[in-house]
Length: 79
Image 1 (tube, helix red, strand yellow):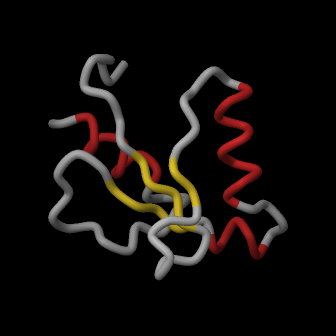
Image 2 (spheres, rainbow, N blue to C red):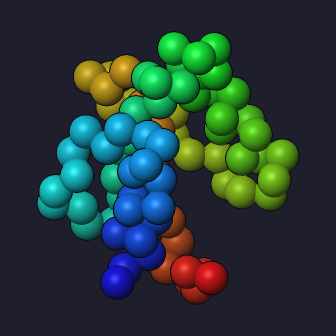
């Protein structure tokens, strides 16, 4: 299993994945349900920085509300 498919599956319980088919090396998740609870995608991206992760591209593509584009590196193991 590729890292991108592994990560997409791991977060799909908490984030809506609007385009779940056809993933190559990146995918987009929507944090709209998190925003309804008061947490914006900007908050999540900043929190990832606090934990030493590279912040994902947020608010793009523009047609996905609270978008977060995730492109996992293949140089890290899934563990």
